[in-house]
Image (tube, rainbow, N blue to C red; front, side, top):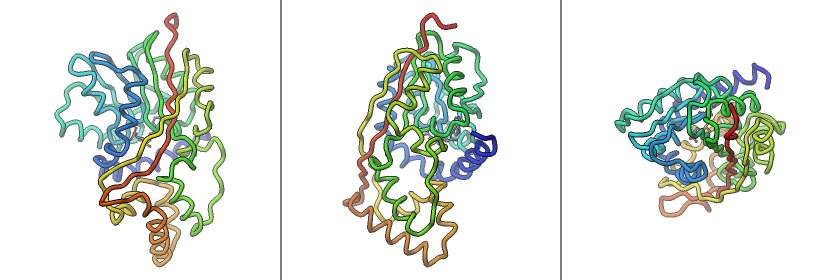
Length: 285
Ligand SMILES: C[S@@+](CC[C@H](N)C(=O)[O-])C[C@H]1O[C@@H](n2cnc3c(N)ncnc32)[C@H](O)[C@@H]1O
């Protein structure tokens, strides 16, 4: 990815960080099944040292801190200053003592070789500026025999939390289709794509599994528009091009289209992700 693109991706996440901070509690609830699945896939247990790549507003780091306990340690990383601040403040509120925070991108991790038992990344690998370089860097810092697990979105059509709104907004705002390698949420949706890159980077025992889950949270449809559009930089950018009456029409159309996913003050969208995991070879340096 050209460096201007990489800078744009980081700028977009910097803008988003205030909203991910604002909605931290909801995001944690919605994606809790993903954190559980990552912990299971990476076989994280007490006393381990775990590195989180692109930890956003704090997950999965904050939950993993509870799993590894005080005899273990979590190292949170994210290249976006606002995310690092939000996650650090949430950790302080919770009084966590076994976690540290670094502003760092996956491509350049400020850690020694073989420093961690496990490396995880929840919904972050799609945004890496140099995916192969980042995967090699992750393998450098995990110990020989150590595990890594990266979680990414599966096909957009399997994720109405994205697709329904995208389809409606595309009727209001003309948009070009993104290239297959554009740093968007669905960059690694094609089965085998990230798996192959991880193998090429040198990981062993690489496997991929699809996980179906429900994106659930206790929010009413009346709160959905603000929450969902604030979460997404691309939705916010599209809406910024519309006149106020068009924004209102887009909102009404989105709320009509998503109504089927709300009942009695609760939201539930069927969803699907891929978890790609592997190990650093025991004989690796
Ligand atoms: C969708 S958010 C996921 C955050 C969190 N892991 C979660 O699941 O809630 C994507 C995160 O990837 C981070 N990111 C973007 N480029 C990155 C890079 N090159 N290396 C590591 N993380 C990156 C962003 O700053 C953002 O916090």
